[in-house]
Length: 391
Ligand code: GLT
Ligand code: MN
Ligand code: MN
Image (tube, rainbow, N blue to C red; front, side, top):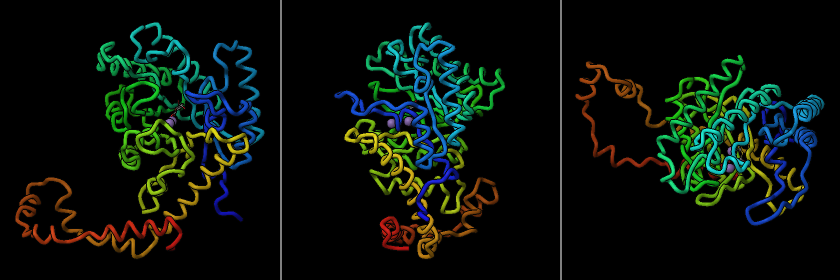
């Protein structure tokens, strides 16, 4: 049996907007015909995915009547049942409609903000109806080019008011749902408010119901800003705020590429999988492994499924490689080398007597400064594990 064939236990999910992406870009028309959501569900199941995520309007066209909506949702639910698929996450499209040209939750016009709340409550109902347990907010239009148009502090206050409002709505309905906020530095706006995962984490601490709000970091969005995605995810995990994740690939300094997972910067992808899977003995991320990416515009529909299989396959290969790396006795010995339990204890928090002992230690900074760390060796071993040259 192929060990890299995905199974439902891997909890891999894709958005309808990812495998359904027709290849439109700012310079060109779609290159692929649009595929019905029910067909996407069937095909995803065939490829070994476990879940499918959606924006309200990926499934129900904007402006559909109530009867139309119910019929579409019923058909979609049957497709999910027929193919044993789930909807782990849902979200609202608060960026396509012209009304959101200058923001949704942060817009100056209160009518736009009211419309955004209205649309979000409807979309939350839809997500819950389909079984979603996580609700993502990506504020694609929440930013500016002409910054004099609004005080950025006011934008943050409006964003807080909206998230607080919708948390209260979820509680009032008794829904079993948490929120995950997704940061992006720019595109489609010149600058987007709360541009990084770290900024989102600080914002969450200021919310009224912060306990039900976490983050949904995306590889591409952190790499666009030249930041370490692994560090961003680690910061979220360390405070139990990694509620969801958007996996893809991206080269630094470019537009949001949303490439097949692992197709760029394999080293970061390896370190990310190692972190998520906890192969070095740390806590594992238990949420969905969601791919927010799409096939190259060069592809036809067959290429879309090559893309989807490739995302899952690379993830699974990297899990295997990360396990082998962390099980390597030489790797373990090298990382463990400098651990000293007594000194760890003395550094572990201020207490007057311990501080006196610490201050009395006869440390030798010159000797500490002379010792090389051997991280060249460690990193080379990692490279060799990634390349399959060491096992
Ligand atoms: C859009 C965006 C993504 C977000 C999606 C959720 S939609 O494709 O580029 O990063 O995660 O709104
Ligand atoms: Mn995303
Ligand atoms: Mn992206």
